[in-house]
Image 1 (tube, rainbow, N blue to C red):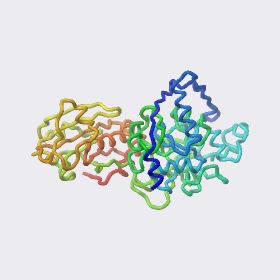
Image 2: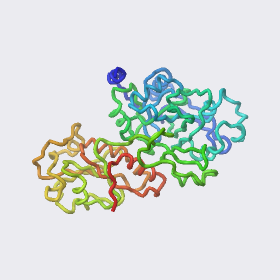
Image 3: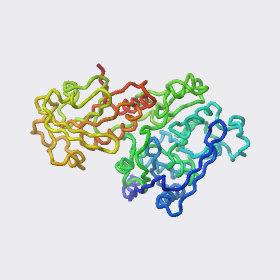
Image 4: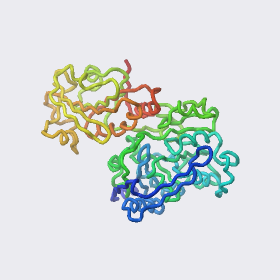
Length: 457
């Protein structure tokens, strides 16, 4: 309890960094397509470079974690070798102690140093295979997907340089090299392996903007690096190549079809469930409830219509609808006259508000109309149960997820958070085919973990 009091009193600073203004990156490719040595020359006159160094110093010396963007989601990073720093992650997120963390690195040389007692000479790894502490099974994946949204499971070296709480008492640890240049620069300049789960309170939707991080962790951490919205939008794929056949422990930005194109991974299997699992989790995202907004989530595999909404919503006031391929607000509203329709652009999606008359709606409720749709839709304190019960209509707030899986993945967590912000009591989300596109399985995995109910035709 005392620890929570201390974190609640922290002042949280948000510092913007434009990676294009930090300095010059020089990347080199080694044999077998691996990313070789790389360097960064910081611009002395750059305010962005100064902010980057500020974040680096916090990672090197503070026991409080730093939030920063990756290409997947925003991470909450700390020195993976210091127990006090890693404890700060668990404390800020209120994360269960047996839920392992992923270690982030900036180079293969850094990873090899983690896996051995001392760095070996470069000549040892000339062919990328012999005497390499990185298991051969992972070489095709590293060549194709690193830097990128892929986490591999490796044996924990003994003695281990990592803080015990990073691995959750497992004999393995997960590691990845992010493709975000800002994340790479932060890790490279810190000279440390960085443990970093998503930068949100546990069970909440993962953050894809700095604003999402601030919403969850304001007062719990001191520093958030704002590098803009994340490109991928869902967490990394986690694979275990130490077993035969290899397995996927968490779906993410790299699909099973993409993995099966790599030598040694033709028979890779799914080793996860789209529901909360029991026992010791082998990877993040397996055991506990994740990705859940405040409102109830209903995942729908059929065509949405007013009858379905009425049947499964009960007497609520505000309904959120996340559409993708087949649902349209015009179709939903066809059963009754639409009294208002306000388009609103957000950073990653579009919100549209429809007010449906009571005789065709789910319940008797409507938010008050204003002349400005932004004030109506983005109110800091949206209306909840118990207000305006005598109105004769119901609000339905739509958000468009896009039509292709990569776009849906990029917008998903932002859409769930935005609908929560609008004060919806229940969210209906359109399901997609989990086999369609490289991000589809990850989207459906996250939605099934967030949903309280699934509706089939």
